[in-house]
Length: 236
Image (cartoon, rainbow, N blue to C red; front, top):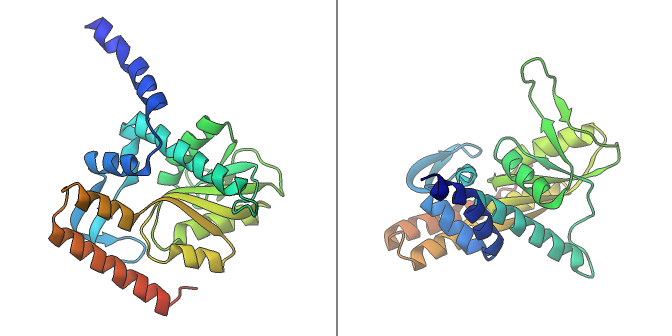
């Protein structure tokens, strides 16, 4: 029994090393872990009914998937920076958006050895609103979040970072629900990158027979309605 258990962490590390960096594999793991559910949910930022609920925080129960997520973010950033006209500015630190973004930012900083800071937008205990961690005024921070709907939490984090002398140019998220966040952030001067978009995830689940055609149509219609609203009624 002892021998079998002792191989667990080693085997997990091997799997993490060998796992292909595939965003659809990550979408599948999210589904398998119960991080994607279908029904009738209220999306916190928009306070409207949604037929799909996504909770990327479940990845903390799957170390390999969490590591793959951080590697996919690193890969996306490296690709964007390698272009002749770089789409991502150099950065000195990463800042996770509480709470899910902190989990991913921690995984990313361990993977890349990039320093991390924590933008505490609300007082906690005896602490005040501010920044945890060391940085130099004038440093550029990359914001990391697990999920974006309309971008309000990201804008709040960016504002706090800038109040404390940091520069913010780019944001990377694991999942974009496609509720207009990219355009909203762009109007505020921030570039948004994502590893997965909700429509790509839905197409994958449909192709694998994991959701019914009826569920797929309901979710697709919901996405079209949200995208249409954001095209006609921009958020300030």
